[in-house]
Length: 241
Image (cartoon, rainbow, N blue to C red; front, side, top):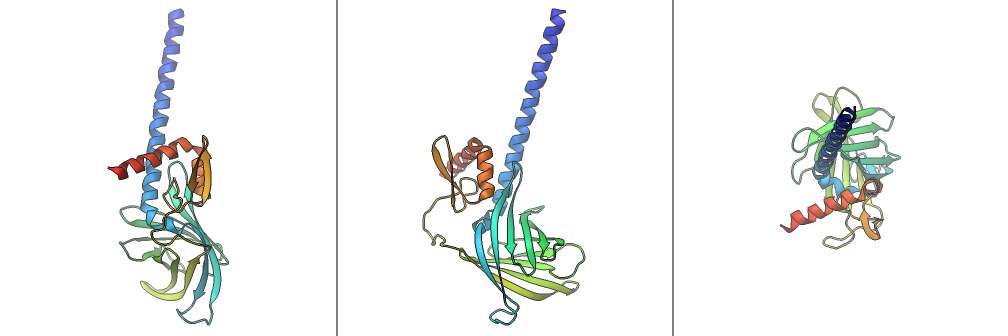
C-alpha cells in the first residue's frame, strides 16, 4: 500500500515537472514570435505617438481639404506584436492595425472604415519605398492605402478607390505632422526598453527606472519586467559582438 502511494506521488511529481517544462517551452516560443513580429514592424515603430493631419483631395489645393488626427501605439501580447492606429475625425479610416503578413516583407492592415465597416488590406514592402496595401475581396470606397514616411516628423497616407479592376483613382491624401517636439537626427534621448523606439513613459522595477514608448509597451513591461529586461540585455549583448 505504501509503495503504491509512493508510486502515485512520484508519477504526479513527474507529470507536474513535465507540464511545467511544456509551459516554459510554449512561453519561450510565444516570446520569440512576438520579438520576430516586432522586428518585422521596426521600420514603422518610429510612428508611435500623436499626429495632426490635413487631408487634400488634390495635393497643394485647399478646396475640399479636411483635418484629422492619429495616434500610433504598439499592440503587444505574450506571443504577438502589431501597431494600432487610432484616427480621430478620419474621413476614410477610423481604426487600423498593422501586422506582419505571411512571408518576407509582407504586411496586413486590418482597418475599420469611417462608416464602421471592416476591410483588410495587404501588400509587400520594399526598402526605401512606400508601403502599398491593397484591399482583399470586393468592395467600394477605399481600395488601396499607401503609407509614405519621408522623415521622422511627417508621414503621408494616400487613399484610392478602384473604379475598375486594377485601375486606381485618388480619393485624397492626408499629410500628418508629429505633435510636440521630436528628436532631431542624431539627438540622444530615452529609448523604449521593449521596442527601442522613442522612450516617452517612465516605468520602474526593483528601484530602477526604464522608459517605454506607449501604453502597449508599458503594459507588457509591467506584466513581466524581468523577461523584458532580459530581452533588452540580450539585444545589447548581440549588438556588442
